[in-house]
Length: 124
Image 1 (cartoon, rainbow, N blue to C red):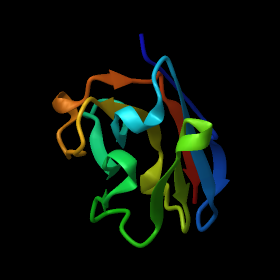
Image 2: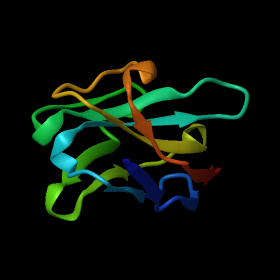
Image 3: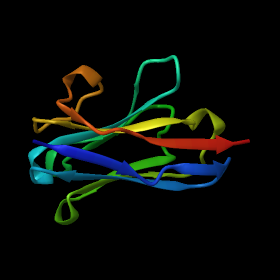
């Protein structure tokens, strides 16, 4: 059984920064390609960023490119999302996703495990 737990969300002013964490248990982090998705109430989860297994390649959506950075620390079994220059439109619940594959994907339905989410609120 794989468990993913997100943390690090909160309330921040526009222009500020947050770092989200996703801690995995049950299997080693190197087993997965990983991703971050976010959901605004009433909408589907949207892709934010992803990283291939062993960190061999990262991807970001156009809306966060240049502002958000995804990374992993396999020794700590943790994935991070560093979010800088936050905007009110970044307000959402952020979810950590894991996929039994070498390769990350933009498609939510291709992920096998997910966490409960952490709320990020950016005030203007």
